[in-house]
Amino acid sequence: MSRPLVAVLNGPNLNLLGRREPALYGHETLADVEELCRRTADRHGCDVDLRQTNHEGVLVDWVQELRESAAGFVVNAGAYTHTSIALRDALVTVPGPVVEVHLTNVHAREDFRHRSYLADVVAAVVAGLGPAGYAAAVEYVATRATRSAVAPA
Image (cartoon, rainbow, N blue to C red; front, side):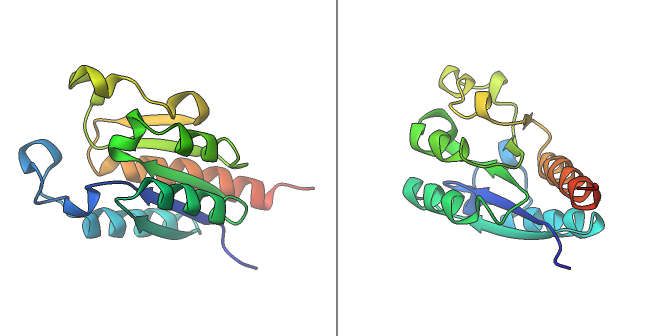
C-alpha cells in the first residue's frame, strides 16, 4: 500500500532563503524548510514531493501534473500569490486540500501583498510563522490524507 503524497510547491525567490533579506525571512534555507516538511510528512505516514521554481507556468504545470496523485498541496507561491490568476485557476482543479503558506505576515507588509488570488480557493492560509508554517500546513494536509486513507468506503 502506497503512502499518501503531499506536494509542496515553492515559487519565485524561495531558492534564496537564508540569503535573501534574512532579517525578514530568517536564516533557514530552502533545504532546511524541505527537511522540516519531510520529517513532518513522515511522522504522519506520508511522502512529500518538494519543488521550487521561479516560473509561473511551471507552477501551473506541476499543479496539473500532481493534482490527482497528491493527497493535497502546500503552496508558497511567493509574489505569484498576488498576481497569478493562472495559478489560482489550476489550484481550483485540485480535489484534495490546498494550504497557502507565507513565511512572513503578509498583512503587516506592503499593501500589494494584502491581496491573495489564492486565498478564496484554498482550505487554509498560514502566514507569519516562518518555517513552522510549512510544518503546520504539511500536518494539516497529511492528517486529512491519512484520515481518508483509513476511512471505510
